[in-house]
Length: 79
Image 1 (cartoon, rainbow, N blue to C red):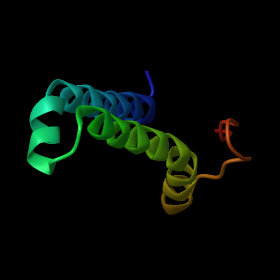
Image 2: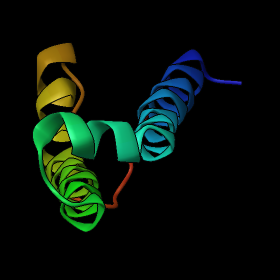
Image 3: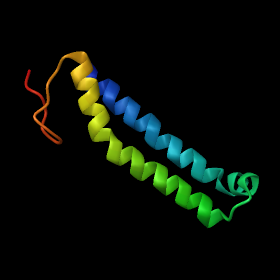
């Protein structure tokens, strides 16, 4: 297996798991922030959506930093 793919998979797993961990602590976090549980849940949703939207550009930026080129979102670089 390609080492880059393994690192990408582990990073994605770690970030995704972080969202689930916070959902388990949602009631306590809502109480600490003095907001309703629904509002705290919306904050988790906004975080997940912004992470999803920025992943494409962060991936392209990392590729440019490492010297690989991408043909655009969803197109794997050659070689």
